[in-house]
Length: 472
Image 1 (cartoon, rainbow, N blue to C red):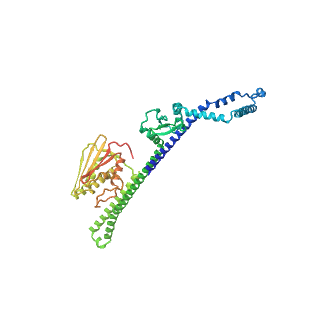
Image 2: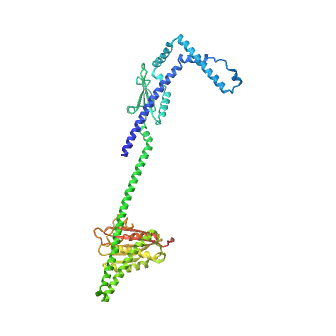
Image 3: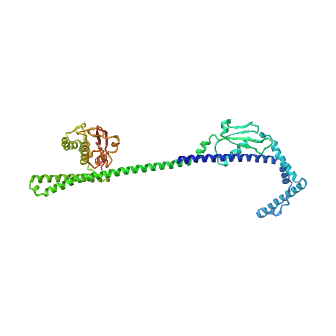
Protein backbone atom coordinates (compact mmCIF):
# COMPACT_ATOMS: atom_id res chain seq x y z
CA UNK A 1 0.00 0.00 0.00
CA UNK A 2 2.87 2.36 0.82
CA UNK A 3 4.51 1.68 -2.54
CA UNK A 4 1.23 2.49 -4.28
CA UNK A 5 1.04 5.72 -2.31
CA UNK A 6 4.63 6.60 -3.25
CA UNK A 7 3.94 5.83 -6.93
CA UNK A 8 0.81 7.96 -6.88
CA UNK A 9 2.69 10.78 -5.17
CA UNK A 10 5.42 10.67 -7.83
CA UNK A 11 2.75 10.84 -10.52
CA UNK A 12 1.24 13.92 -8.88
CA UNK A 13 4.68 15.52 -8.66
CA UNK A 14 5.17 14.86 -12.39
CA UNK A 15 1.84 16.39 -13.28
CA UNK A 16 2.63 19.43 -11.14
CA UNK A 17 5.98 19.79 -12.88
CA UNK A 18 4.34 19.60 -16.33
CA UNK A 19 1.75 22.17 -15.34
CA UNK A 20 4.43 24.54 -14.02
CA UNK A 21 6.49 24.21 -17.21
CA UNK A 22 3.50 24.98 -19.42
CA UNK A 23 2.64 27.97 -17.25
CA UNK A 24 6.24 29.17 -17.49
CA UNK A 25 6.15 28.87 -21.31
CA UNK A 26 2.92 30.86 -21.48
CA UNK A 27 4.42 33.53 -19.26
CA UNK A 28 7.57 33.63 -21.39
CA UNK A 29 5.57 34.09 -24.64
CA UNK A 30 3.48 36.82 -23.05
CA UNK A 31 6.58 38.62 -21.77
CA UNK A 32 8.25 38.40 -25.20
CA UNK A 33 5.23 39.95 -26.93
CA UNK A 34 4.94 42.66 -24.30
CA UNK A 35 8.63 43.55 -24.53
CA UNK A 36 8.44 43.68 -28.34
CA UNK A 37 5.37 45.92 -28.16
CA UNK A 38 7.07 48.15 -25.60
CA UNK A 39 10.13 48.47 -27.81
CA UNK A 40 8.05 49.59 -30.78
CA UNK A 41 5.90 51.99 -28.74
CA UNK A 42 9.04 53.70 -27.45
CA UNK A 43 10.05 54.43 -31.06
CA UNK A 44 6.62 55.64 -32.23
CA UNK A 45 5.24 59.28 -32.53
CA UNK A 46 3.05 58.53 -29.53
CA UNK A 47 6.08 58.28 -27.26
CA UNK A 48 7.67 61.30 -28.98
CA UNK A 49 4.54 63.41 -28.25
CA UNK A 50 4.73 62.43 -24.59
CA UNK A 51 8.42 63.37 -24.47
CA UNK A 52 7.70 66.77 -26.12
CA UNK A 53 4.96 67.43 -23.58
CA UNK A 54 7.40 66.81 -20.76
CA UNK A 55 10.09 69.06 -22.31
CA UNK A 56 7.74 71.95 -23.25
CA UNK A 57 6.20 72.20 -19.85
CA UNK A 58 7.50 75.07 -17.75
CA UNK A 59 6.33 75.17 -14.18
CA UNK A 60 5.10 78.30 -12.51
CA UNK A 61 7.46 80.51 -10.59
CA UNK A 62 8.84 78.76 -7.55
CA UNK A 63 7.62 79.97 -4.22
CA UNK A 64 10.38 82.24 -2.82
CA UNK A 65 9.52 81.13 0.67
CA UNK A 66 11.03 77.72 -0.13
CA UNK A 67 14.35 79.36 -0.98
CA UNK A 68 14.34 81.23 2.28
CA UNK A 69 13.37 78.13 4.22
CA UNK A 70 14.33 74.95 2.37
CA UNK A 71 13.80 72.80 5.48
CA UNK A 72 10.09 73.46 5.41
CA UNK A 73 9.03 69.96 4.34
CA UNK A 74 5.33 70.73 4.32
CA UNK A 75 5.83 73.69 2.00
CA UNK A 76 8.14 71.68 -0.23
CA UNK A 77 5.62 68.86 -0.49
CA UNK A 78 2.82 71.34 -1.32
CA UNK A 79 4.92 72.96 -4.04
CA UNK A 80 5.80 69.56 -5.57
CA UNK A 81 2.14 68.61 -5.72
CA UNK A 82 1.36 71.89 -7.41
CA UNK A 83 4.04 71.25 -10.04
CA UNK A 84 2.74 67.75 -10.76
CA UNK A 85 -0.80 69.08 -11.04
CA UNK A 86 0.40 71.78 -13.40
CA UNK A 87 2.18 69.25 -15.68
CA UNK A 88 -0.92 67.01 -15.86
CA UNK A 89 -3.07 70.04 -16.65
CA UNK A 90 -0.59 71.02 -19.41
CA UNK A 91 -0.60 67.47 -20.92
CA UNK A 92 -4.41 67.32 -20.81
CA UNK A 93 -4.72 70.68 -22.55
CA UNK A 94 -2.25 69.58 -25.27
CA UNK A 95 -4.04 66.28 -25.73
CA UNK A 96 -7.36 68.08 -25.99
CA UNK A 97 -5.82 70.39 -28.57
CA UNK A 98 -4.39 67.48 -30.55
CA UNK A 99 -7.69 65.64 -30.21
CA UNK A 100 -9.39 68.70 -31.50
CA UNK A 101 -6.97 69.12 -34.42
CA UNK A 102 -6.05 65.56 -35.34
CA UNK A 103 -8.91 63.75 -33.62
CA UNK A 104 -9.11 60.25 -32.19
CA UNK A 105 -8.16 58.86 -35.57
CA UNK A 106 -4.59 60.01 -34.95
CA UNK A 107 -4.08 57.56 -32.07
CA UNK A 108 -5.89 54.75 -33.85
CA UNK A 109 -3.66 55.18 -36.90
CA UNK A 110 -0.52 55.20 -34.79
CA UNK A 111 -1.56 52.03 -32.98
CA UNK A 112 -2.44 50.36 -36.26
CA UNK A 113 0.96 51.33 -37.65
CA UNK A 114 2.65 49.69 -34.66
CA UNK A 115 0.62 46.48 -35.08
CA UNK A 116 1.23 46.47 -38.84
CA UNK A 117 4.96 46.97 -38.39
CA UNK A 118 5.11 44.05 -36.00
CA UNK A 119 3.21 41.89 -38.50
CA UNK A 120 5.48 42.92 -41.38
CA UNK A 121 8.65 42.31 -39.40
CA UNK A 122 10.20 38.91 -40.24
CA UNK A 123 10.16 36.37 -37.42
CA UNK A 124 13.93 36.14 -37.08
CA UNK A 125 14.12 39.95 -36.67
CA UNK A 126 11.66 39.85 -33.82
CA UNK A 127 13.46 37.02 -32.07
CA UNK A 128 16.26 37.83 -29.69
CA UNK A 129 17.97 34.69 -28.38
CA UNK A 130 19.38 36.37 -25.28
CA UNK A 131 16.01 37.87 -24.48
CA UNK A 132 14.34 34.48 -25.01
CA UNK A 133 16.83 32.71 -22.73
CA UNK A 134 16.57 35.29 -19.96
CA UNK A 135 12.76 35.30 -20.22
CA UNK A 136 12.62 31.50 -20.01
CA UNK A 137 15.01 31.44 -17.05
CA UNK A 138 13.00 34.07 -15.19
CA UNK A 139 9.65 32.39 -15.88
CA UNK A 140 10.90 28.96 -14.76
CA UNK A 141 12.58 30.41 -11.69
CA UNK A 142 9.39 32.23 -10.68
CA UNK A 143 7.58 28.86 -10.66
CA UNK A 144 10.32 27.13 -8.68
CA UNK A 145 11.81 25.04 -11.52
CA UNK A 146 15.59 24.96 -11.37
CA UNK A 147 16.30 21.98 -13.59
CA UNK A 148 18.61 22.30 -16.60
CA UNK A 149 16.89 22.35 -19.97
CA UNK A 150 17.53 22.41 -23.73
CA UNK A 151 15.46 24.49 -26.11
CA UNK A 152 14.93 24.84 -29.84
CA UNK A 153 13.15 27.57 -31.85
CA UNK A 154 11.61 26.99 -35.27
CA UNK A 155 10.47 29.76 -37.60
CA UNK A 156 6.99 29.73 -39.16
CA UNK A 157 8.59 28.13 -42.25
CA UNK A 158 10.08 25.22 -40.28
CA UNK A 159 13.63 26.55 -40.17
CA UNK A 160 15.62 25.90 -37.04
CA UNK A 161 16.80 29.23 -35.69
CA UNK A 162 18.23 28.32 -32.31
CA UNK A 163 19.07 24.99 -30.75
CA UNK A 164 20.86 25.03 -27.44
CA UNK A 165 22.77 23.24 -26.21
CA UNK A 166 22.27 20.15 -28.40
CA UNK A 167 20.50 19.01 -31.52
CA UNK A 168 16.86 18.05 -31.12
CA UNK A 169 16.01 14.74 -32.76
CA UNK A 170 12.47 13.38 -33.16
CA UNK A 171 12.63 11.35 -29.98
CA UNK A 172 13.66 14.37 -27.94
CA UNK A 173 11.02 16.55 -29.57
CA UNK A 174 8.31 14.01 -28.73
CA UNK A 175 9.21 14.23 -25.05
CA UNK A 176 9.49 18.02 -25.11
CA UNK A 177 7.14 20.79 -24.13
CA UNK A 178 6.11 23.15 -26.92
CA UNK A 179 4.36 26.46 -27.39
CA UNK A 180 3.80 29.06 -30.14
CA UNK A 181 5.86 32.25 -30.34
CA UNK A 182 3.99 35.40 -31.39
CA UNK A 183 0.79 33.41 -31.91
CA UNK A 184 -1.15 36.56 -33.00
CA UNK A 185 1.14 37.19 -35.98
CA UNK A 186 -1.35 36.53 -38.81
CA UNK A 187 0.89 37.83 -41.61
CA UNK A 188 4.02 35.70 -41.04
CA UNK A 189 2.55 33.05 -38.80
CA UNK A 190 3.77 32.00 -35.35
CA UNK A 191 7.08 30.35 -34.57
CA UNK A 192 7.42 27.31 -32.34
CA UNK A 193 9.45 26.79 -29.17
CA UNK A 194 10.47 23.35 -27.94
CA UNK A 195 11.93 22.90 -24.47
CA UNK A 196 13.26 19.63 -23.13
CA UNK A 197 14.30 18.65 -19.59
CA UNK A 198 16.78 15.75 -19.80
CA UNK A 199 16.86 15.43 -16.00
CA UNK A 200 13.10 15.59 -15.48
CA UNK A 201 12.81 12.25 -13.66
CA UNK A 202 15.82 12.96 -11.48
CA UNK A 203 14.52 16.44 -10.66
CA UNK A 204 11.10 15.10 -9.67
CA UNK A 205 12.76 12.36 -7.63
CA UNK A 206 15.06 14.84 -5.87
CA UNK A 207 12.10 17.07 -4.99
CA UNK A 208 10.33 14.02 -3.58
CA UNK A 209 13.27 12.74 -1.56
CA UNK A 210 12.05 14.29 1.67
CA UNK A 211 8.66 12.67 1.25
CA UNK A 212 10.17 9.38 0.09
CA UNK A 213 12.71 9.41 2.92
CA UNK A 214 10.07 10.05 5.56
CA UNK A 215 7.85 7.36 4.05
CA UNK A 216 10.66 4.81 3.95
CA UNK A 217 11.71 5.75 7.47
CA UNK A 218 8.12 5.39 8.65
CA UNK A 219 7.87 1.97 6.96
CA UNK A 220 11.18 0.92 8.46
CA UNK A 221 10.05 1.96 11.94
CA UNK A 222 6.81 0.04 11.48
CA UNK A 223 8.64 -3.08 10.29
CA UNK A 224 11.21 -2.89 13.08
CA UNK A 225 8.48 -2.32 15.65
CA UNK A 226 6.50 -5.23 14.26
CA UNK A 227 9.59 -7.46 14.21
CA UNK A 228 10.46 -6.44 17.77
CA UNK A 229 6.89 -7.08 18.91
CA UNK A 230 6.81 -10.51 17.26
CA UNK A 231 10.23 -11.39 18.67
CA UNK A 232 9.19 -10.25 22.13
CA UNK A 233 5.94 -12.23 21.95
CA UNK A 234 7.78 -15.36 20.82
CA UNK A 235 10.43 -14.90 23.51
CA UNK A 236 7.80 -14.37 26.18
CA UNK A 237 5.87 -17.40 24.92
CA UNK A 238 9.00 -19.51 24.99
CA UNK A 239 9.94 -18.22 28.44
CA UNK A 240 6.43 -18.92 29.68
CA UNK A 241 6.62 -22.47 28.37
CA UNK A 242 10.04 -22.96 29.95
CA UNK A 243 8.83 -21.61 33.28
CA UNK A 244 5.78 -23.86 33.13
CA UNK A 245 8.02 -26.82 32.37
CA UNK A 246 10.31 -25.78 35.22
CA UNK A 247 7.43 -25.59 37.69
CA UNK A 248 6.16 -29.00 36.58
CA UNK A 249 9.61 -30.55 36.91
CA UNK A 250 10.22 -28.88 40.24
CA UNK A 251 6.85 -30.05 41.53
CA UNK A 252 7.63 -33.59 40.43
CA UNK A 253 11.14 -33.52 41.89
CA UNK A 254 9.85 -32.21 45.22
CA UNK A 255 6.82 -34.45 45.34
CA UNK A 256 8.79 -37.66 44.86
CA UNK A 257 10.90 -37.42 48.06
CA UNK A 258 7.93 -36.09 50.00
CA UNK A 259 5.84 -39.10 48.95
CA UNK A 260 8.68 -41.46 49.84
CA UNK A 261 9.10 -39.84 53.26
CA UNK A 262 5.36 -40.02 53.84
CA UNK A 263 5.29 -43.73 52.98
CA UNK A 264 8.28 -44.47 55.22
CA UNK A 265 6.61 -42.61 58.12
CA UNK A 266 3.45 -44.71 57.67
CA UNK A 267 5.53 -47.86 57.77
CA UNK A 268 7.24 -46.71 60.98
CA UNK A 269 3.86 -45.99 62.50
CA UNK A 270 2.92 -49.67 62.08
CA UNK A 271 3.71 -51.54 65.36
CA UNK A 272 4.49 -54.75 63.49
CA UNK A 273 7.20 -52.99 61.46
CA UNK A 274 8.84 -51.34 64.46
CA UNK A 275 9.20 -54.69 66.24
CA UNK A 276 11.98 -55.49 63.75
CA UNK A 277 15.03 -53.33 64.43
CA UNK A 278 16.33 -53.79 60.89
CA UNK A 279 13.12 -52.45 59.36
CA UNK A 280 13.19 -49.44 61.64
CA UNK A 281 16.77 -48.67 60.66
CA UNK A 282 15.96 -49.16 56.98
CA UNK A 283 12.98 -46.81 56.89
CA UNK A 284 14.77 -44.23 59.00
CA UNK A 285 17.62 -44.27 56.50
CA UNK A 286 15.13 -43.78 53.65
CA UNK A 287 13.64 -40.79 55.41
CA UNK A 288 17.08 -39.30 55.97
CA UNK A 289 18.20 -39.82 52.36
CA UNK A 290 15.00 -38.42 50.88
CA UNK A 291 15.13 -35.47 53.23
CA UNK A 292 18.68 -34.71 52.07
CA UNK A 293 17.53 -35.09 48.47
CA UNK A 294 14.70 -32.65 49.12
CA UNK A 295 17.10 -30.25 50.80
CA UNK A 296 19.47 -30.42 47.82
CA UNK A 297 16.65 -29.59 45.39
CA UNK A 298 15.59 -26.58 47.41
CA UNK A 299 19.18 -25.45 47.83
CA UNK A 300 19.78 -25.61 44.07
CA UNK A 301 16.82 -23.34 43.35
CA UNK A 302 17.76 -20.89 46.12
CA UNK A 303 21.38 -20.92 45.06
CA UNK A 304 20.52 -20.07 41.48
CA UNK A 305 18.17 -17.31 42.68
CA UNK A 306 20.97 -15.77 44.71
CA UNK A 307 23.29 -16.06 41.73
CA UNK A 308 20.80 -14.24 39.50
CA UNK A 309 20.51 -11.42 42.02
CA UNK A 310 24.27 -11.18 42.42
CA UNK A 311 24.04 -12.15 46.09
CA UNK A 312 26.06 -15.35 45.76
CA UNK A 313 29.47 -14.78 47.32
CA UNK A 314 32.58 -16.52 46.07
CA UNK A 315 35.18 -17.72 48.53
CA UNK A 316 38.15 -17.75 46.22
CA UNK A 317 41.33 -19.37 47.43
CA UNK A 318 44.26 -21.02 45.77
CA UNK A 319 43.36 -24.63 45.05
CA UNK A 320 44.35 -27.67 42.98
CA UNK A 321 41.83 -28.26 40.20
CA UNK A 322 43.13 -31.82 39.65
CA UNK A 323 42.28 -32.66 43.25
CA UNK A 324 38.71 -31.42 42.80
CA UNK A 325 38.33 -33.50 39.63
CA UNK A 326 39.64 -36.63 41.35
CA UNK A 327 37.17 -36.23 44.23
CA UNK A 328 34.17 -35.76 41.94
CA UNK A 329 35.12 -38.65 39.62
CA UNK A 330 35.66 -40.96 42.58
CA UNK A 331 32.18 -40.21 44.01
CA UNK A 332 30.33 -40.50 40.68
CA UNK A 333 32.19 -43.53 39.34
CA UNK A 334 30.01 -45.93 41.33
CA UNK A 335 26.86 -44.52 39.68
CA UNK A 336 28.43 -45.04 36.24
CA UNK A 337 29.58 -48.55 37.10
CA UNK A 338 26.02 -49.54 38.06
CA UNK A 339 25.10 -48.76 34.44
CA UNK A 340 28.04 -50.86 33.24
CA UNK A 341 29.65 -47.68 31.94
CA UNK A 342 33.11 -46.15 32.13
CA UNK A 343 34.28 -42.92 33.70
CA UNK A 344 37.93 -42.08 33.03
CA UNK A 345 40.15 -39.19 34.02
CA UNK A 346 43.41 -37.96 32.47
CA UNK A 347 45.62 -34.99 33.28
CA UNK A 348 47.57 -33.41 30.42
CA UNK A 349 48.93 -30.42 32.32
CA UNK A 350 51.45 -30.10 35.08
CA UNK A 351 50.24 -26.81 36.50
CA UNK A 352 46.75 -27.19 38.00
CA UNK A 353 46.86 -24.41 40.58
CA UNK A 354 44.12 -21.83 40.17
CA UNK A 355 42.27 -19.37 42.34
CA UNK A 356 38.60 -20.15 42.76
CA UNK A 357 35.69 -21.30 44.90
CA UNK A 358 36.10 -25.01 45.64
CA UNK A 359 32.45 -25.67 46.46
CA UNK A 360 31.02 -24.06 43.32
CA UNK A 361 33.67 -25.57 41.04
CA UNK A 362 32.85 -28.97 42.53
CA UNK A 363 29.19 -28.39 41.71
CA UNK A 364 30.19 -27.46 38.14
CA UNK A 365 31.97 -30.81 37.63
CA UNK A 366 29.08 -32.68 39.26
CA UNK A 367 26.58 -31.02 36.92
CA UNK A 368 28.56 -31.82 33.77
CA UNK A 369 29.09 -35.49 34.68
CA UNK A 370 25.48 -35.79 35.83
CA UNK A 371 24.27 -34.48 32.44
CA UNK A 372 26.53 -36.98 30.66
CA UNK A 373 24.86 -39.76 32.64
CA UNK A 374 21.30 -38.45 32.16
CA UNK A 375 21.57 -38.02 28.40
CA UNK A 376 23.26 -41.35 27.69
CA UNK A 377 22.14 -43.67 24.95
CA UNK A 378 22.88 -47.16 26.32
CA UNK A 379 26.11 -47.65 28.19
CA UNK A 380 27.65 -44.34 29.26
CA UNK A 381 31.31 -43.76 28.38
CA UNK A 382 32.55 -40.54 29.92
CA UNK A 383 36.04 -39.10 29.72
CA UNK A 384 37.31 -36.12 31.71
CA UNK A 385 40.64 -34.54 30.82
CA UNK A 386 42.60 -31.34 31.36
CA UNK A 387 44.77 -29.28 29.03
CA UNK A 388 46.56 -26.00 29.50
CA UNK A 389 48.16 -23.10 27.71
CA UNK A 390 50.11 -20.08 28.91
CA UNK A 391 47.04 -18.36 30.34
CA UNK A 392 44.98 -21.06 32.02
CA UNK A 393 43.63 -24.59 32.12
CA UNK A 394 40.93 -26.29 30.05
CA UNK A 395 38.64 -29.04 31.41
CA UNK A 396 36.87 -31.24 28.83
CA UNK A 397 33.97 -33.55 29.73
CA UNK A 398 33.23 -35.87 26.80
CA UNK A 399 30.44 -38.45 26.50
CA UNK A 400 28.87 -40.75 23.92
CA UNK A 401 25.29 -39.72 24.61
CA UNK A 402 22.38 -38.65 22.41
CA UNK A 403 24.12 -35.47 21.31
CA UNK A 404 22.55 -32.19 20.25
CA UNK A 405 21.82 -30.24 17.09
CA UNK A 406 23.40 -26.87 16.33
CA UNK A 407 20.18 -25.06 17.21
CA UNK A 408 20.03 -26.82 20.58
CA UNK A 409 23.65 -25.98 21.44
CA UNK A 410 22.80 -22.26 21.19
CA UNK A 411 20.17 -22.63 23.92
CA UNK A 412 21.65 -25.06 26.46
CA UNK A 413 23.12 -22.31 28.64
CA UNK A 414 19.81 -20.45 28.99
CA UNK A 415 17.95 -20.83 32.23
CA UNK A 416 15.00 -23.28 32.35
CA UNK A 417 16.05 -24.81 29.03
CA UNK A 418 16.14 -28.60 28.89
CA UNK A 419 17.44 -30.63 25.98
CA UNK A 420 14.50 -32.41 24.31
CA UNK A 421 14.61 -36.22 24.44
CA UNK A 422 11.70 -36.97 22.12
CA UNK A 423 8.79 -38.93 23.56
CA UNK A 424 10.90 -40.30 26.44
CA UNK A 425 10.63 -38.27 29.64
CA UNK A 426 13.09 -40.12 31.82
CA UNK A 427 15.49 -37.18 32.23
CA UNK A 428 14.84 -35.30 35.44
CA UNK A 429 15.95 -31.82 36.34
CA UNK A 430 14.99 -28.16 36.59
CA UNK A 431 16.78 -26.88 33.49
CA UNK A 432 19.11 -24.79 35.65
CA UNK A 433 22.24 -26.96 35.60
CA UNK A 434 24.14 -25.59 32.60
CA UNK A 435 22.89 -22.07 33.22
CA UNK A 436 24.34 -22.35 36.74
CA UNK A 437 27.58 -23.79 35.35
CA UNK A 438 28.02 -20.89 32.91
CA UNK A 439 27.33 -18.33 35.65
CA UNK A 440 29.98 -19.87 37.90
CA UNK A 441 32.55 -20.02 35.10
CA UNK A 442 31.80 -16.41 34.17
CA UNK A 443 32.25 -15.43 37.81
CA UNK A 444 35.76 -16.92 37.61
CA UNK A 445 36.48 -14.86 34.45
CA UNK A 446 36.52 -18.04 32.41
CA UNK A 447 34.61 -19.25 29.38
CA UNK A 448 32.62 -22.31 28.40
CA UNK A 449 31.70 -23.89 25.07
CA UNK A 450 29.99 -27.00 23.74
CA UNK A 451 30.53 -29.24 20.73
CA UNK A 452 28.06 -31.93 19.80
CA UNK A 453 26.51 -33.99 17.02
CA UNK A 454 23.23 -35.90 17.22
CA UNK A 455 23.76 -39.54 18.30
CA UNK A 456 27.54 -39.02 18.50
CA UNK A 457 27.95 -37.49 21.93
CA UNK A 458 28.79 -34.11 23.42
CA UNK A 459 31.92 -32.37 24.70
CA UNK A 460 31.57 -29.55 27.23
CA UNK A 461 34.76 -27.55 27.73
CA UNK A 462 35.42 -24.74 30.17
CA UNK A 463 38.48 -22.58 30.73
CA UNK A 464 39.80 -21.12 33.99
CA UNK A 465 42.70 -18.64 34.07
CA UNK A 466 45.79 -19.28 36.15
CA UNK A 467 45.71 -15.75 37.57
CA UNK A 468 42.44 -14.18 38.56
CA UNK A 469 42.96 -10.69 40.03
CA UNK A 470 39.27 -9.83 40.02
CA UNK A 471 37.58 -10.64 43.29
CA UNK A 472 33.87 -11.18 43.76
